[in-house]
Image (tube, rainbow, N blue to C red; front, top):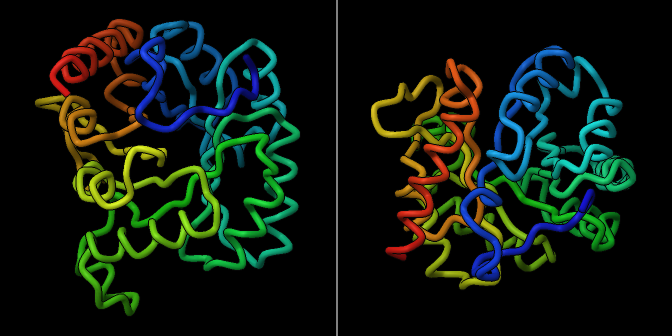
Length: 248
């Protein structure tokens, strides 16, 4: 159903690998996004709209996809003062999206304001450390912790403030799952099937590796959207995930 809140791992047996696959619509035109959604169809369960597409086309496309029965992950990585974030979350909830991101680095006041504004109408996900970051990038902005330590610190903050889950790289997923248990949504971006280019992602893994580590959902962009047959590429990733689920 449009606007349905996505559950945390462990998921019900009826929620399979297809529903766990999020396709990133990282394009700049609504017609390009529509074509991709038409071509991929039901091969994936969720479609992600991020800053690139949302800035170019605004909320109308989000409403269109939600209205067509698609689950939409609105990846805006909100990072502002609590009042501003609160109003943005309310606007996103009114669009009927299933998931929305806010930066955990905004602090507890921002996260609590976001959770209160969401009011259970969407799954609020706290972004921990971007997948393009390394330890040296953290040091550059004054963070002395290692990447895993920073992820754990921000995950604890997200859980304490009532967020439904987090976004982190698959490299930290097993550690987060072990530390925080099954009741937390973990979304892994930056997925790269075996043999695919890393592009601008620093901390990557294959879909199977992410699922075995405990990811609830994985986000795949270019390996699907740039494929000659995006639906076939999505189905192949789902098959890889299914095999991993059987072994987990």
